[in-house]
Image (cartoon, rainbow, N blue to C red):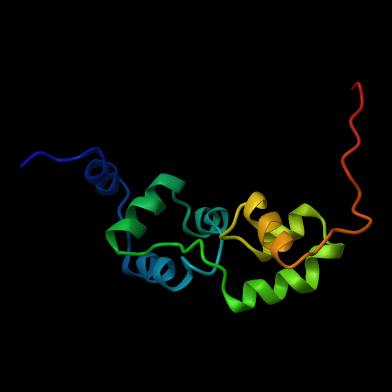
Length: 115
């Protein structure tokens, strides 16, 4: 039987039962960056294990995410928006905000300098 690259990579990074449980319990709740930090594994290793466990991040918006978006969008900077919506890109966040006619107010834009 031929082994795929995914099987080989997954075998190289051994998972404990506690790590698997942490992944299952948190995969939908926290960002991939937080998973990398907590599990001390690469992004690819985490994605491969999640796939093996049948875990999928949904690009659908939950009621809680929509509530947070409505509450914070207008007065929050980009970092906060990404933190409250870790399963969505900034583009997706802005698109969803537009559906609710939300506009950001008084947000400091980056100032580019010659340096």
